[in-house]
Length: 428
Image (tube, rainbow, N blue to C red; front, side, top):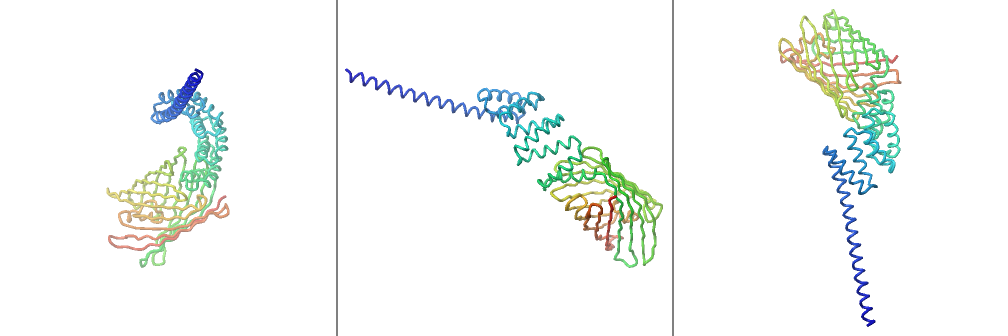
């Protein structure tokens, strides 16, 4: 009898252990399933956010934080969804909740800073940026948001100083390079300059030609203005056959945060220059270092009116700037194209660079042949040039460039032209 009772107790104990073990397995499985479902819910919430289904994203994130209140990712989704639905105060609450519990949460900083910049809350954005950059010095997004802060504030001096520091961290960023040059052009500067172009021709009895200029350049935050007096001397058989003076003025002025315009005009009563030469260009800065420009030209020479349209595109990449400009010029109801490719490799500032030029055709922008534009516009020409320009000691700017032009001067008759250009400027 005792033996039977002992066996019964053992059976009951064994059965209890089995039941407990099964219970533990079931509970563990349920908990694991809950974890998987929570993770899946987060993925689904982010997908709804990505698809623009903000109400669904909010509903899923609320469900997720209820099941797993310590899961901060759900609060980030709620913050972002409220931000995108213009519920900014709710978004701030959720981002603040996340950062109070994890001050290194990068995504929360990124979204919150972007929202404050969008709302022009610059003081709050600056506070958040300081914390974000301290927590994540290696992050590449926060330095760009700092740049946007200075840009949106319109503090050009602070932006200019900051970008010079940033360019050493991101030397290949074309947008930074482009912006630095744009800001540099708004820096107050007054310069006096001299320049001279010497052109020689490989034809008996032709040349050389001389073109000399005295100029004054005044740069201010609004733009710049340039006054110039040009003197030309045309020689043949070692004698001067024509000479004269031209007066010229031009201005660059900013029309927006990422755009500017260029106007110029010149007049002369001498045969060695056109009577009138005027033009205009509009420049628009695009993303990723690109720039687009278009404009018009008008030249009055030898009793002929020569209008032209221009279209150009340029880009910065690393230390390079490449620009292509096309000219479409009308003469006697016919249109003639010309193209110019300019490539610069910047060594330091906007005044320090190597310059390469190549082109086809004759355009109204080539100063040394202005008085012969009507004769050359319909003829072929191929040219290249290479130059070096440098700033010395903060006061002096110097430059030299050489060029070669294979020019058709009559139908199927060609000549070689060699050009040397020297430039000197003194910063007042």
